[in-house]
Image (cartoon, rainbow, N blue to C red; front, side, top):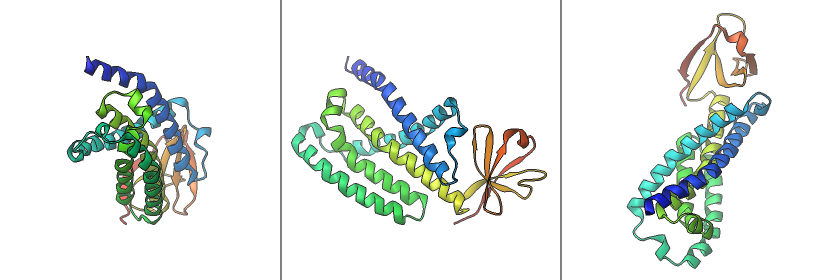
Length: 231
């Protein structure tokens, strides 16, 4: 019966998780395309927004699984047995400290692993106290379910924004392994960096550094390949 209750709780929370994922999927799109002065919602449809929300949710879920595994190894006592008053009292200070450290780390980080390392540290620090708040305790009776939902609540925005920032910076700095696009004539005959497909357009960065929007109808003959620009 306990297992059925946990499954029922997860089913009840699924619509809220979906809306939350769509919100941060939109935040990813806005953050990523803002680096290229593009308003994504002028080009995208509902299906593409939902697809992006699924990608964001998948990325965050990988982190949630890792956090659940780590929690199982490092957790020596059930947080329910610890003073709830003490947990709630330290939550505010934890948020302030972690936010300050994360902001500094993101500002000075030179590579994507450093950013994701900071994201995991932030999530691991906050997941336990957040999962013990009244909202989570009253909504989910199972500790693993509470931990997973709390981790997802934190990791969705963190992973979405870091992914948007790091991917956009790689294109702007022509760094790492990027997807290239080449056409037999006219634009991109010598190869352009593919920023992404948005609606009925391909957005590319030309050799002159300018961002170009190419309609899909113009891309009947093209070649996609990867090129590693290194560090």
